Image (cartoon, rainbow, N blue to C red; front, top):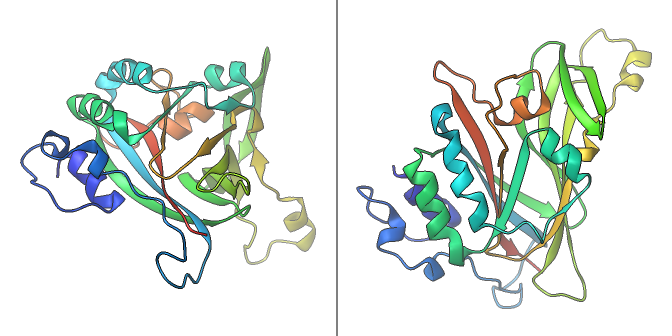
Length: 262
């Protein structure tokens, strides 16, 4: 299935042809999710902020193609916790609306990007959830930049490395939410035979310096990807963006706000 077709189907639009990229035949405006209130759609059991997250992979040799994607997107709406640390950890980010999606999708498709996994998040306002990007079965070291001239190494595992995402509705701005995301390691603490005292010492490790915030409405999307090829998987950037397999690949994450249910 073509990369563009996968995006269209998973956002919730109609079926298209598999033989060619869907954006060649369908207007981008038709693909954007629409905001609607609970009253318009009948009784709602949950008031949620809904996201679709697409994990993308492209061949490592084509990572330079991302250089053509970032200028299409906006960075001004994003508030980085630490701009220096964000870049030093090889993270890049851009924001867009569906009006520019055809151009972004065309560049990604030409680079051989594929959707390898789709995650749906239905977030209650103010309650976080994790997008897991790596599962660690045993202890290992991870190195990262926590600030200017501050290189740190932490021993983590077993557990998961992911992106913790929290979204809150903005009362005075209907159809708008504030998204707060930051990388985190979450240890596995429920293991038979582990002493209670040791369990109490286990806690999440937040890589706060690499966190970011922004306001989003339905139809907005965020692309999170590598600033350069993440060769070393012992770094935070490597854990997020280096694909695991026989063929070297690079991962990126497309976060789409699909609905804000009141």
